[in-house]
Length: 585
Image (cartoon, rainbow, N blue to C red; front, side, top):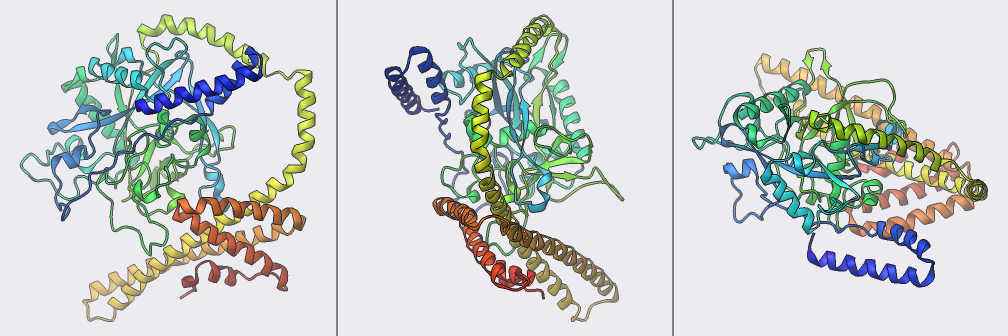
């Protein structure tokens, strides 16, 4: 955090304090000032970006490019076999003690799912870290203390008596092919100048179980070869490498302690400062006829506010947790496959949001599930009940119990609160219908985006199908002809599956139009105008929002057509309007 920001924030604090002290009693002013200062957003840290290429880019990477292409003073490094390094970034959670944690909103309202929005409904989650500064190697402790004294986002100052910083450490990059070879294959790429163009790409085509095995083998290597580099407690307890939990991954991907709590909880992406998603993510950008050819090298785009690269796009990332439905306030009891986060280079904008989650099967009929665009990053963590904390944990547990009981008492409504709530309910009933209409409109827009995305995907698949059919016109050996027939059959089946999805989304879109007709026209049109104004203001910041505004204008047109046409608007008309090139071939 720059001294310029600290100076500005101090001036802002003084101005707020002066304003309220003149108008309220000291106790009321203190309360209001606290609330007001909580709303002063943290500055968005300067993003870290790759150095611009001069002339032709290298076809074969240097060892530095493969290990840490974007060096920063905030980097924490662990040694790896073959002289390599695992680069980590610290994530700091301010808490009152070991039983304190930070609650935030996990998931997203609707990451372009339409009718599949049940995959990642928003819910409250909690995150904390197992380490305090005292648990860390001396060099790490000095570095992090220096950062907090300068101003390290929401991480408490070392002299803060009200809260403590608890830490976990997460990979700055996705695990690369180079790192995988060093740990799993006992190979040392680059030792004799033998790096390949694929070494700096994220490691993919591995199962969840193989990723877990990587964390085990790498931790065992550290324990044997570099024990002093790890955080440690008494009784022979040391830090270890594992996959991140979904909460750890998403909190860090959203910007962690380097963005404000309101930004963590309200934004679907970390603050972009007016820049396009393409500055931060390798993905299939709006308007692209097909995805990028392959995975990019790690760190090829700009970082998020925490200094992490490729949390959006490039390779999707496995996490430790199994998949469970999100019910808004808790997780459902049924436990499924594992979770993949962040989307890949093959995905579009809505699919690379930090809150988006995909359920992946642990197994298919031929064995453990693998995908060519699914990789992972790791965290450094530890147990949370080391023996040297037993006494402190025992005392804090008693205090924590008292605080929980007090919190319950504080939550009991007074008569005044009940009266105010009754009055508020009369007001909210009047607004509820308008909010429902707004949700219907937003749902229609997200569904239209899904229709557009699937239609573009279908177009790419049709190009490939035509190419395969054209190859059959050449004189080829019988064995090649059989293989072509098999590939053509698979391609046609894939197109058929996409057609089913498109039809389903189009029907859902029409149902949204029908739903909109149930409400008074004046209230409906008022909400349409409000959303229109919001999109007009936002469209200048992102090509995606411009595309959404175009879809909004189309939705308005379809609502009018549905009213005027006998039998309502036809699915074919909807598809032709949303994506003219998607006319069935």
